[in-house]
Structures are given as C-alpha cells and as structure tokens.
Image (tube, rainbow, N blue to C red; front, side):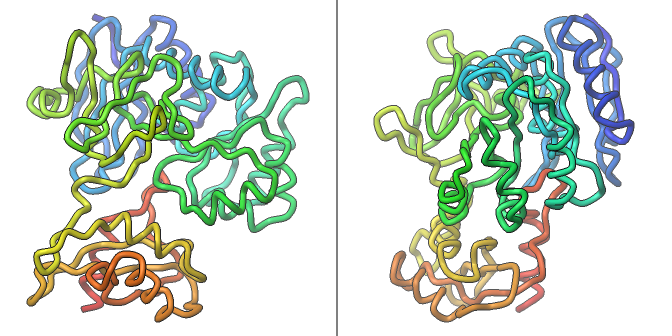
Length: 376
C-alpha cells in the first residue's frame, strides 16, 4: 500500500504536475480535487494499492460522479502511446482542467516527453489567452494541445489563433463527438486535428481517428464498444458492484464496457453515440446522437445538442437546443426529417446564447434537459 494524497486544482497546474510526477515515479498516489461546490465531498482512503497512480473523478454528465482507479503503468502507457501516435515528443499547451483525465494526460505526456507544459491563463478560455500561452512555447521541440470542440471552434474563429494552430504537430480533440463541419473547417485551415476517443476508465483517449493506439484494443459486443489493453482502469473506488458491471475479463484480457454504440469498418471504429440516448417515440427508436449529427451540419446549428422530453401522445420526443441566433430553423428541422424520417425531427429548436457546459467542456445534459422541460 502507498499513501493517497489530495491536491486541489486551485493550487495551480505546476503543483499538480509535481504531485503527478511523484505519483508516477512510485510516490504517493494522487487525487486532484476540483473544488467545485458539492464535488469531491466523499472521503478518500488514506492508502491505496501500491500499483495505483491516480484516482480520477468523472464529470458525471448523466449520472452520479464516480472515482476511477488508474494504475501508474496505465497512465504511463497512455502517454507513451499518444507520443508515438502523434509522431514524437511535444511541448504542450494546457487548455483543460487538471482535475479531469484530459488535463492530467497533458501533464503526463509532458512528463514523458520531458517538456514543460504552458497553461492557458484566465477564468474563461479565449483565443487571446491561448495565443499568449503558445508564445511561451520553446522552439526546441514540436508543439501540441488538447481541446474540446467548443474551444477549437473559438480558435478557428480567430485568424491569429488559426495561424498558431497550423504550426502545431497535432491538436487532439475529445470530450464529445466533434461535429463534421467543425472538423472540415480545421482541415481547410491546414490544422492537423486528431479525434481522440476514450474516457477516464481508459486513462483518456486510446483511439485516435478511429484507430486504437499503443496497446489499446477495440471490440464490439452486442453493438457496444468495448475497450481493452494496457491503459484500462482497475475499476471504481469503493464500488465493487459498478466495477463488476462495467469491467469484464475475457481470455485474460480486461475490457471496459463504454455504453457507447459503435461499429468497426475493418480496423476503424465509428462511434454512433450513447446506447442510452436511443429513445422510443411512438413505438419507433430514435437516436439523439444521429439527430445531433444531422442538425450540426445545418447553418446556425453547429453548436447544438438534442435531449428527450416527455410527450403525452408519443411517450418521448426530441428537442434541440442551439447556441446563437437562428438562421433558418425550419429548414434545419426539415433537413433532419429528410435524413431520419419525421420521427427524428425535433419538436423545436430552443435558442440560447451559449450551451451550458461542464468544467470539462462537455455539454451539461442535465441542464439541457431542464431547459427543454421548462420551455414546455
């Protein structure tokens, strides 16, 4: 056993970086507390198994937060696999919270590459702060960053930020499905965007652009994406029931059940969305992820999400929430109906200034559902 220490994210990324360095080198294991109201409230054990390096709290977008137990070797394997997949060591711009696995991975990759990360400063992400951080990077190695789609969209809107990103070895984008139009904008701007797929339970992204990296493995079982290999977590802290439900062993290989629907096209994974985002409307199954994919390709709907609301006649119906002023919402809804049938057409599009997001950058599904319900 070894000690498990709690470090507050508010202490700064440099403090977290040194605590992570110690954890991955055999010192005390690390839990980074977000400091958000109501979070991190559950007590931690004083000690944990010797091989454990990190305990990471998930964002809990649709359920209660969970604490994921990650072996140090899994975190190191993730960093090494990422470095190899991206073409070599890089110096990283840190633009993500360090109490989530995506931010911690930026620090772990920096430790692996023996480079000093540079953090984006300020309470709110913007292009100016990102450019300022990028200016602090050295010219001795390649540059890289990890973003969520909303951050990438912000940078693509700024000509100077686009110029900065063109010089990066790679821009990892994860956290949620990236809209096709956003990926196309980045490609047209000459930016190397790499779509990252994974979760806290897999030490972060272990599938890049649909292909497993390093020792990661992918399989589809009854339509569900399952991930295995060298970066898989031990399970959930103090929750053996959920651990047994979400982690399975098969022929000596440990697999994490993602609860995502997907398919394999040869060796390339295509994630179709959450299996639990399929609703039944009037006896017909409707995928909210499929609706989002079509809707985000329509003018004025690039930043949109779809949730289900109760309906007296149909049981459930989809409702869309989109950021920004409407362009032609009726045409957007018609495009969804053309692509997916009338049952897939959202009841309406609710317009907001910005989508509610979690600190991780993912859409806050609970807040979105509340908005849709309040709109009637």
